[in-house]
Amino acid sequence: MYTELANGFECCFAPRHVRRRERCAAQGNRGCLPHVRKWAMEPYALPHGAKGIEGDGFAVEFRADKIVFVPKADSKATHYTLHTGANSGVIDLHATGGDGETHRTLFAIRKDDLFGLLQEMAPIVPELLGLLRPLRLGWLKHRNIGIARGIEPVADAEIAAVTRKRKKRLTLDPELYCQNIDCPEFLEDVYDFPDGNFTLLHKGRAIGMGLKKTLRTRGHSLILD
View 1 (tube, rainbow, N blue to C red):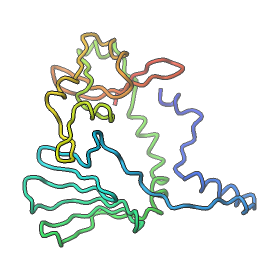
View 2 (view 1 turned 90 degrees about the vertical axis):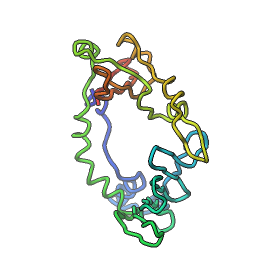
View 3 (view 1 turned 135 degrees about the vertical axis):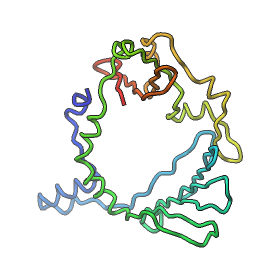
View 4 (view 1 turned 180 degrees about the horizontal axis):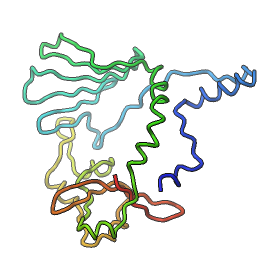
């Protein structure tokens, strides 16, 4: 099914202005070369206007040019920071000791090298897509597998429906979470789900995830992840 969806599409990770520049250079027409502008990561807006996420033992803070992962159990514990490189041009992940002075770089890459890295990873894309396969209701029924929506909220609307903002951070509301879980009696009800992920259940235990996608030419399709 994914092979059918992929037909006619070219998998290319190079930015548009780079591909156009290569074509123009091959034609000997340098006048059509566009001005290459610096790019920057767009800030992600959390639901409810929150600036972070709070879990049982950790917190994640989204700041102007970085993301900070902070353990909550010990205020002097090591925390981790991902810099987006808005000014330096370098994306890096580093650990900061409890003293606030000790820094250790765990990973770093220049933004200019990021596209090249993605291009090197292009050959594994077909292999990753090969891990997905069509999901049939008959197969689920034969193996006594049920479905549920809302157990793993992923979309912004789903996250907003089960969280509240407390001290500028998103926190999970157990009551709202339970209210938003939908376990239909019949497998066919999955076609009434909005496009997105749903959970596969067997004997009350989550065993996998399915994806629902509405296609223009073939109606509803289910994919096993």
